[in-house]
Amino acid sequence: MRHGVAALPAWLVVLVAAVAAERLAELVVSVRHSRWARARGGVEHGRGHYPVMVALHTALLAGVLVEVAVAGRAFVPVVGWSALCAVVLLQGLRWWCVRSLGPRWNTRVIVVPGLPLVRRGPYRWLRHPNYLVVAAEGVALPLVHGAWLTALVFTAANAAVLTVRLRVENAALGLTG
Image (cartoon, rainbow, N blue to C red; front, side):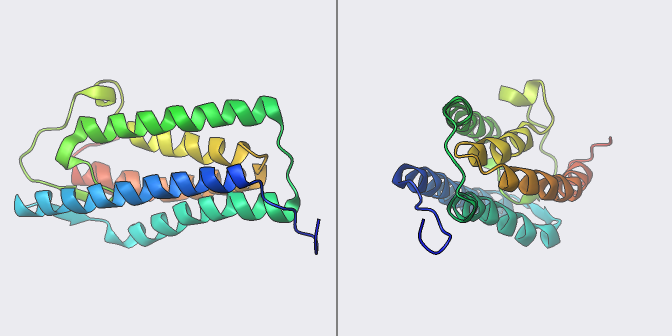
C-alpha cells in the first residue's frame, strides 16, 4: 500500500474498461434507434431522470475501482469468480433484450405511437427484463473484487431511479401497475 491506496489489479481495470466499452456500444445503438423512432413520430418521455441514470451508471464503474483501491478490498475466489460469471451472463441477457426490442430499444424512453408492445425474447415473460439485468449487474460487477459498499449504494440509488423510470415508461407505454 502506498499512501493508503492499494494497487488495482490490472485485470479488474480491464474488466471495468470492457464494461465501459460495452456501455459506449449501447449508446451508439441507442442514438441510431433514437433516430429511427423519431423518424416515425417517436416521442420522448421523462427526460429529467436520464442524466441521473447516466451519472449513476458511470458512478458504478468508478465506484468499483475506487472502493477496491481505497478500501483495499480483497479478491475472494468463490465470490469473485461467481460474480464474474454472472457479469458475463448478464451481458448476454442485456443484448438479448436489445435484440428482442430491435430498433425500439433505447436508453431513453422514446415511444412510437401505434406500435404494439413487443412480446418476443424475454419480453414474453417479463415486462422490463433489461432492468432486472441492470439491477443484477449492479451487484455482480462490484462483487467481482469485493466492492460490497459500491454494490449496496448502487442498488439503493438504482432502486430510486428505477422507481421514476418505470413510472415514466409504463405511462408512456399505456401500462398500469
